[in-house]
Amino acid sequence: MRAQNRHFGATRGADTLSEALVHPVRDGRRELANTQASVVAKVDASPEQVAKQHMCLSCHGVNEALVGPAFTDVAEKYVGDGDALVNLFNKVRQGGSGVWGAVPMPAQSGPTDSELKGLITWILELEKN
Image (cartoon, rainbow, N blue to C red):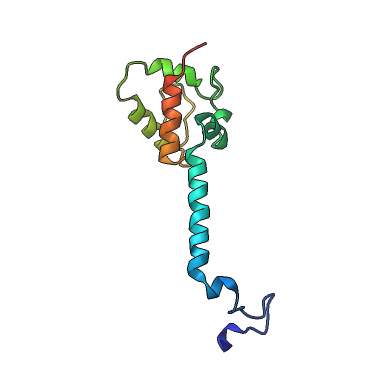
């Protein structure tokens, strides 16, 4: 206890009787429940929300090309390609260039695997208007 009691700084010592230290398991369960709730919320996000959240729409329009191709153009290009989901997943994760022009797409690590698979599936199901 003596080592925890500092005579300098903004915090003079640790409160060893706080609820968090007396019942760490209970707090751990509460944190785990909060974490699980946030994961569920992310999984339930629509592909459009994922695209907005991870800034995909700053370079790609749904129906119009911006810096990169429109999502509908991507869907059209990969019609009938059984490996499209896997190939596009890897392209988004690793980045790349040359397929849609000279501007490279940087690697995207933000979306979770399930978010990214959902987003790519949605893109591949889009039809050109």
